[in-house]
Length: 340
Length: 141
Image (cartoon, each protein chain N blue to C red):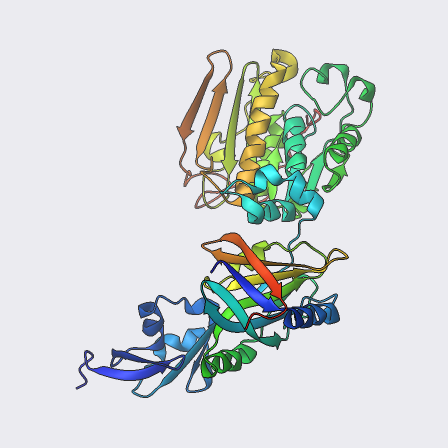
């Protein structure tokens, strides 16, 4: 019987090393604090695949060699971009690597209205590589009190056209893709499939549930928000990891049960407060930094000057993301009003 | 290490190699000795870029093994790992940082994006980088 504590001598990169008899290559690398996943390994001149390390037992006189992989890629920020994003790049948590992640990312903002305005302004300014905007509406005078993407001179123009102009002016490095159409059951999955993060900036429940369900099916991160009067709420939805919108609000409210902004009003700046929170959450998700609002609902009340964070668990009985979902395909909602 | 010193002729040779490989990224290893906290380059190993790409590089491990053996046999150390950025600035990319597995080595990036070639050196550890001095000298022996 072999005593595993007996020592044997091997060579590692031409240096003598005493190891316990019976040690395998994987254990040797653990002992040396070397991650074999990022290295190429040879034993007595033969390449050893990573999956074979744990079943390769070392014997006296073995010659082990390893090299770490050497590779990388081009820095994808130009000098102009380095200067433009210098206040980002200087942030320790973000740095040049985080800014590159932002540049490589794509975000779809559904709605170019109250929430969509600050979201898309800040995401464009932050240097998101591709920014998609979908809205079928034209600019109305009553929009101008909160929808800061649009100016008085834009009245009656399609919102996505007006938005494109402003966003391109802010940051010509961003590819702006616009969709002057209504989001519906037929196009939503195809549209969101091309994007990393989806931002819900709509103001009606049918669209909100359609986007939630589509994001669950496509496993897309969704930054969800809503505003009314002096209040707003934000929630980050990471399907399969945390609760979805239906885990909290199972069904859309009955028609006329909840007033719209048109009926109940909204303080314009609430769209700014909540929209910028959405943009912040989107950037954090892209750069993979900080605490995510997934699993919580952040509620802002401007009159009370209060933020309240409610912890939310995933509902195993959720009809769309639960263990035995009833909803397995998108429901044909009647989206009667435009998304903004 | 506060910086690296490379002889002018070696500097030119590496830059010429990067230009020859343009538009693809060129890569290689610089061996040498460390004296008074300076890495002195003594030997250049030109490596092939397995990716054959203008936007990324990956050295063939089968080429790396003999290089490291040669370094050991000649009492040289790994001083720097170089690669070119054909069209972008001399800064570590996200991929460069993610794949920086030799914290003791200087990661040299040679940018051909401008008319004038820019060579910068970085120490990269724990996903963070710090620029160090790269000196090209006529002779430092």
